Image (cartoon, rainbow, N blue to C red; front, top):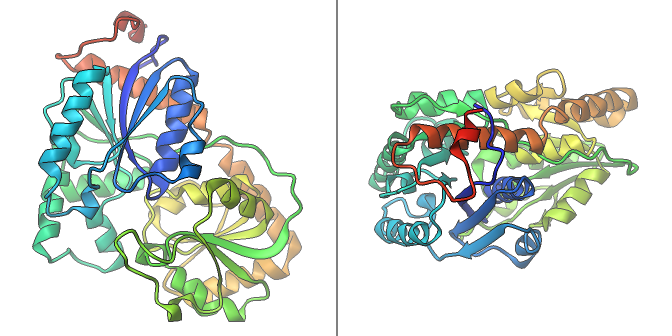
Length: 382
């Protein structure tokens, strides 16, 4: 399916908690650059000022900030009905060509436009990867049922890797098989002189990031380990001080400052137990960092041959890999070059074109579609 040559009106949900904001705002900017009009609707905590500044002057991009709960922060579904009513009101006012949801349960709404769901992560797959088995609390049963229902109701759903698509397919068995669109970023090779430190990024309290493994070995490494990310979650959970160890916590950084740290760092480490894609890894690779990554399916799919892969449960293996890069400049330079070359395979433009083509195909399959007046659906079939 070819992308439409004239602009679409896209209603897209997002949140400001983590990587979904980076994904959604980057995609929205790129769609607007191609002549589409995008309205971003936030769920969950309000975006911070530095997040808003990055999209303030994008022509064709509108933002609506709500106080609606994110589904993983509201597993019991207390805010579910209100969210559907609020989003239906927004759709009725905007009359978009397509609704792009960066969550699951909202696909259960009574939408007029066709609905595409992007599957970024889910609590059930997180739980299996980090804790084993299934969550036992009834509130997560409700969450899982809503995810399954949303995937079933969506006209199409997309995952950022084949590995995560297959995981979602196995866990929820949606009636439509999901597609895969690799995440992408603007790629600008770095020319900044690298400094002798190891960088990691993520929420220190999130078991999935497995940053405690870095804290446990930091004192055994030749270089300091700096970690960018919040110590405390939005619901108040806090990383234990003993889990921080000898690392240097940088705290939550504005995106521009995080990218600057990546440009300076010689090595980037991500020993994650669970990572459906890993945008920070892609950004670090584009910044010329040598990568040490956990040997999990999604990272193998994206980075095999361009990173040192280690067992995330083996602290000694993580330590040895990082020591090797710190001590061997030739090895470090080889992996820096390999990671930058691999990152060039995942450009933002390709992601945007793939989503535009998916929008067009989804719209053609939806019998209730009402196109915006400036878009000719015949051109999507060309």
